[in-house]
Amino acid sequence: MPLSLYAFILCLMYLSSSKAETCQNEGEEFHRFFVVNGQPLHLPCPIYHGSMTENNFSVSWYKYGSKNPIGFDRMSRIHQHENYLKFIPAVLEDSEWYLCVLGNSTQCYQKGSKVEVFNYDEGVCYSKPTLYPAEGFTDQSISLQCPHMEAYFDDTSTKIEWFKDCIPLNLSSDQYYAIKNALTITKGTKENEGKYTCEAPYYFNGTRYKLSRTSDLVLRAPLKQSSPAIINPTNNIMHVDLGSFVSVTCTVLFKKESVAFDFIYWTLEDGDLIENYVGYNEWIIVGDLYTNSTNDNEHWLTVDLNFTAIREEDYNRTFFCSTTSGSRAFIMFKHPDPNFQGFLIVFFVSLVIVIVITLILFKIFKVDIVLFYRSNCVAKVILNDGKIYDAYVMYPKNTNRNSSYTMDIFALKVLPEVLERQCFYRLFIFGRDDIPGQATVDVIDNAISQSRRLVIILGNTSSEYRLENDFEQQIAMYDALIRNKTKVILLELERIADYSNMPESIKYIKQKQGVVRWKGEFTEANLSTSSKFWKNLRYRLPPEQPQSVEDSNYITTDDL
Image 1 (cartoon, one colour):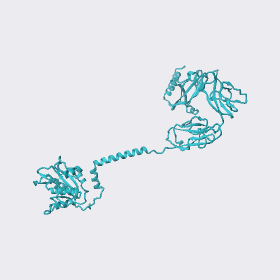
Image 2 (cartoon, one colour):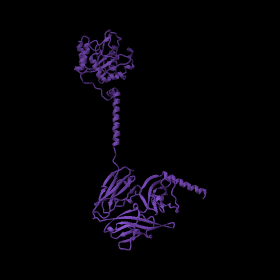
Image 3 (cartoon, rainbow, N blue to C red):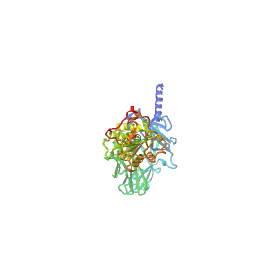
Image 4 (cartoon, rainbow, N blue to C red):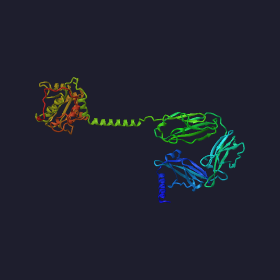
């Protein structure tokens, strides 16, 4: 053999073994292949179809666990011929799984088939595991086929012998006659029940072998005709996803009075068999017919319709489960209804997150939001509540009359500069806005009742300054907390660590609503309305009014 040809053969063997390992696995063939020890067996490739030859598919067979393909040598007892794996003959040691690999340059598939080899049972010409079930009815003619012989010989020229319970049948009698590979019993009786064996010669490489098949015939009394009941499907619609695997079972119940023997099958809406559907053997497969007798009064027939992957052309088509007696029921596939559950979950979770974040941001920027809203979203109108002043300002008086006293500077100059001049608030400050000669109590009482807020400026209590006018404080607290319920704003000009010496009313207000605390010096930056202190104070004051204040003394940073 030339070296180049030898290398080419080795390359093909390597590719075949590699293909068996990397091909798409189609699982295992459901049916087992039974054969009697010493008889030939032709094992067909379970995934091979005649049309595949047009696509240059090649077939290779492997024994499970082996990486070497089975050869084509006809002199070998086990060899491959076309898509068949042939055992001539099969022996007990051949009971094993065999793998068929089908592929071309772009595709590759593999599927396994099980071979089981048996000896004859003792004293008979058959083996029970290899029996084929057969049914018939008394007082009717019965036809028995010699099962699965098509791949072995030409039934028109091969002579087939028939046996009942291993005894040759007299085919010249009126009770039996045989045509090709079928045996007909003219009129069945209970005596006709038994094991019917068909035998045919098989020649290979000059050697004669024997092929035999045995059917176990059971006869029943004929049943009266009645319509079978289709249990499933129920003329229903299934909502299935595109590309999903779907299996629908046609289930029919036959009563005792049903026809002697009935078949069920799947058809299209026009009555054509499902085998004529464009997708048959590609993604649609009809399963085997199964029968099950629950008791003497009824039996069931079932056959599956399997869609390996639902395609668009399968939607809105009706597939009928039909019986030979004319009964039928359909199943139709529809696209699934939209599933909004995931969207709703995401929506509501997102909504909760947005609400939580909004609440957190509002809490952090509440003052800025309220001030922005007042300035841009609400038209400035004069409040018609009958009050003249936006705030009554009360602060500890300087007992030493020191003009540089910080409290006086803040109350009489800084506060009016920002609130009255820049923000247009109207303040009443006792000692600045009262008219000399008026009764102090009346002035204070009247001014507080005409004010929308009460601003109390606090500082560290010392011998140098204090809330001198106790009656002013008492009137203010009485008016704010009891009579008119005026809102109070506590303003710390200096940080007060201990409120134990403060009046109970001050401590009560601080506990309920806190204080606004001044920090830093009286600089130009600190006099800006955008600083944190003035924002907090403006937030507690009423909305700014659209009028300016006249006849007030204002300061600039040069005066401080």
